[in-house]
Image: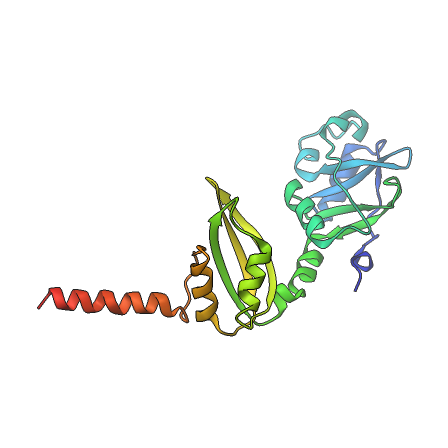
Length: 219
């Protein structure tokens, strides 16, 4: 299903002439964090409920244009970028504009986008999650794919989950097979395995040797 099919248009865009008192009543009947605002029929930004609650009910939106947040997405935007805009603006509603970024088509709701994300293979397919770490200048997506596929695995998804002090952590989801071999190969290519796995024979061997050494020293 195309994401454009998830556009909802049951919330009218509010003109800048709208009284704040009326807007407060509108918010009292909604669960949304923002509502879209237009001037001369063109979208100019969204106003948050938390701001509106602090405004003078006798004034209009035009008196508070400085409080508008001009976030939006195009109807053909990718899912990941839509989620990025949601997160960056701390909102649960996201105005959708046409290709000319003028006409308001409706909005995306955060819960719908999260549901769409859950239906992607990264979340929907059965698999194992691995978190690996390597130098920011040393890791390679092509190398990661080669490591997994050379051990008869399939990569369902990969993203940078952390960047700090010249190191990056990558979260991978792979098909549930030959985990021990895949982890061993990652280590051979100098990737640190951050996540823990029951199938990790390397760690299991270290644990057994440690227990044996402890027992020997206690004799």
